Image 1 (cartoon, rainbow, N blue to C red):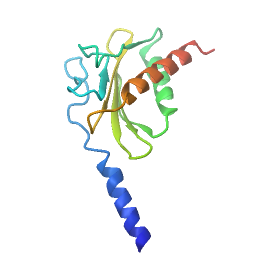
Image 2 (image 1 turned 180 degrees about the vertical axis):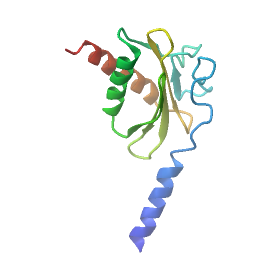
Image 3 (image 1 turned 30 degrees about the vertical axis):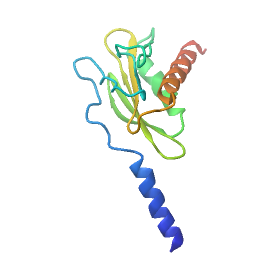
Image 4 (image 1 turned 60 degrees about the vertical axis):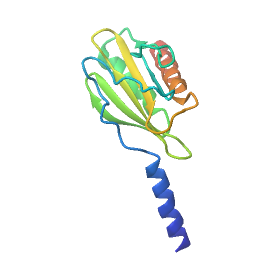
Length: 148
């Protein structure tokens, strides 16, 4: 009985740290959602340097770049693609310990670039996790581009 109680409490904590999926995600007027005034978000479309991260670029066709990006994303643990269109990916990234969820979005406009936004659902600080994740994805995406 004690194990059941611990399991129920663990599930409650796990799901309460996930937070609600924001309603403003996706592409609106060729833009991803803006970052809030908190330091737990980065975006390639942010107007300020605190939230800005450079977009990614590619040379081949959009479908090949999307497949390469999905391969990179699928190499991360606790990361799942939860939404996809021909020019957009929505990914949920869950932290290892408390199960906090970050929303990671990619937008493929007509130009050969990929805009991205990574934001924590809960809390104020993310200790640079979203920026580090964005840069790691950029590095791996670039490496897959140059791989034989």
